[in-house]
Image (cartoon, rainbow, N blue to C red):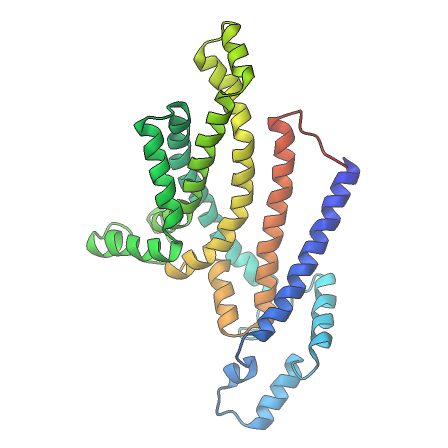
Length: 307
């Protein structure tokens, strides 16, 4: 197990380095000069040259990259070019809002997908299965950037039940959570339904019935537990997707999380803040993936850590 954990740690470090390198290159390819955006197009050339030198943008890319990498290795995510605030502190202040949104989106997805998926899986070739399939297709087909405005139109403008934007009480998170969790609920419904149906067709189910176990006991003690392994996998991996998907949802609903922070950083060409934000999202995704691997062994002792 120690070798496995060391291997996972090294892979995670390499992944973060690759992401950091890719982002460093990509963000500098985006058209737009951060110095001109900060000073304005009418700024005197002397001021532009001075600020460019202060930010280190007068140096070649590989020098800028090595300086940024050296700062990262020393735990220094630098300061924002626009606000002058420490990037790590800024991200930590915004992170709870994104985690809250992802958490309630996951709760919404679970509340919708588990009943539909279980009923669809147990009642094959019935209206329950067709209904579960229909909802899955609808959830997958409607993107966040389309569903969000539709929810605002119906439930904030035509029928003013929920706030349009911002973060406050529970009512503020309902529409963003539905928007972000809709796609996940569709995938989970499909996965749960298919997983249960596959388990019901396996020989051990017939063996359990032959031993005199009731249908409820077979489903509860065998089918449901075994069918949850791929579902837990999907939930763990999709939690990282929720964080990245929150970028669109947070922008639509003016939710003060790191997704919206990333959009602002890219728009203003704030290289240090954009790099730090993407690294934070990537680290969270890698961490969640590692936790899912550990949960595997709890759900099914037959699954071992391969070294």
